Length: 358
Ligand code: SAM
Ligand code: SF4
Image (cartoon, rainbow, N blue to C red; front, side, top):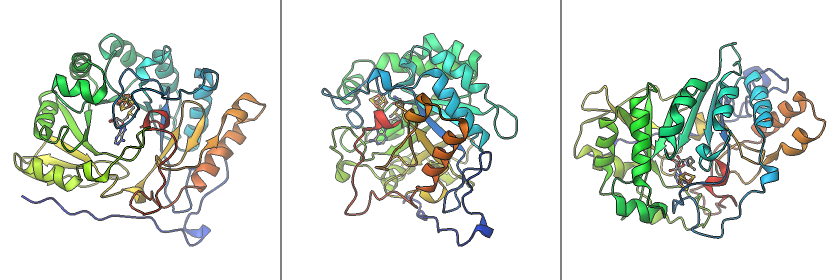
């Protein structure tokens, strides 16, 4: 079965205020100049990690963020509260490895209590490599964590060791088992597909997810590694992933993707599903509703942006919440219609994925 074609969308600029151009008033939704409403804030808690995935971090020589620049819990809560007052409904904790943060349970507790725009609590999710989940998950769930994505690129110990430069597959598997045994659903597993590395394991990974009542989401490798070694030829494309899965299962597209990064397919008629995040070959920028906050207080409107909006001086000076809201709006206003990975002049951001927050 051949892969299913995709429409690649770019947003068009709003012609006039009457169509709903960006607003500058605190409390109004965070709408960019292309009409995209921002409801999802990705919060990176640290650039440190227990693994060294080759597509994300260098083996050695990484320049860590200065500890004095890392946002405190109170600073994170302040930014998140301002964002929620202006329409953000989901916070996703990421990193680096978010579970390395010593106050992670308290971070979850405080963020999960922030009221969203309709007065209901925001939804709190986390992307993690799963290491430390067995010990931390009960406390995280009790504190208010609602959704988990766990990354696993291979089920083979030797490969895992080479790919992450750490011999910790068993710890990741224990984390996934803990998540599967918990009540958190939907549970998602992330795998970056790489040619000659794990592309012979795609159906095994998808089956592993099904066996854990989870959805596997394959990610096209993006040019975001700190070592700047991304090579388009080694990237396994969306269509190649779908072709591999279609050798084993009948795939039926799930409609109503909304602003979600993953396209999803029902497996053999459903209800079980598999997803693909095809940022490179089928970008979904037209529906992007995401903003990012780095661990050192920089706002970003895109993974691939080379511009950051520095909140630290506001937080550590005398600025009021209206100024923080103003910075959020400047960041949203500066958002381009799409990333330019496929343009000849594309420039990779200076930070690696671990410092941006995936
Ligand atoms: N450490 C956690 C983890 O690995 O899940 C959270 C941070 S990690 C940066 C978030 C996600 O980004 C992971 O699923 C990881 O596989 C993905 N990622 C990192 N670098 C990537 C790249 N160059 N291309 C595609 N995905 C990448
Ligand atoms: Fe760490 Fe996640 Fe990056 Fe792997 S992808 S090095 S687990 S931050």
